[in-house]
Image: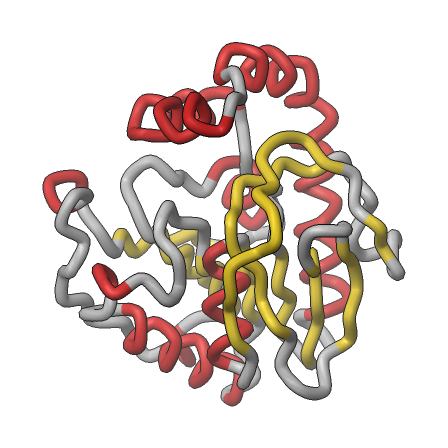
Length: 233
């Protein structure tokens, strides 16, 4: 079995989500969209493979908005790739930006949120046997407008947090987040963003260290449930 993780940028590794897929017997492949030397100029040209070559596709998070003009050179191509995967019955697990791109691929929209969600957050889940209440790590300014026909699974007061449509599951939060990953985000411009919002990166790191063991176990359970309940439907 093969799983393709679409890494939008170089500081967003597959983390425990990728590890959980590997533990379930998947060969985990990674497609990096924007390499390190183009992070400030992300208008790269990207060729996405035939999605039917894979048994699962996982588009991951990104520091850009789905409607950001600076990624216009590849965003439509990725959205089309996700649409083709979904229509072919390839299970798709969209994470944060990846979940928003999946929403667009399925006929929804992405718009600015009424507020920013950053940090460890409990969510309101209609199906805790699939998407647990958390806490899950959030870092986003946008939210999706759900595509038609989806099962709405979870939300906060700021944004929808999960939906399902056939063999696709979209998540607004980051189940893959680890302390090391957060350090990478902070060192790649995130710390400056947090200071502008009055949020301490050191406090966020400290909380993440305390949450990490439980959060990794939660991520493994989420992957198991995605594979057992969504991918096999």
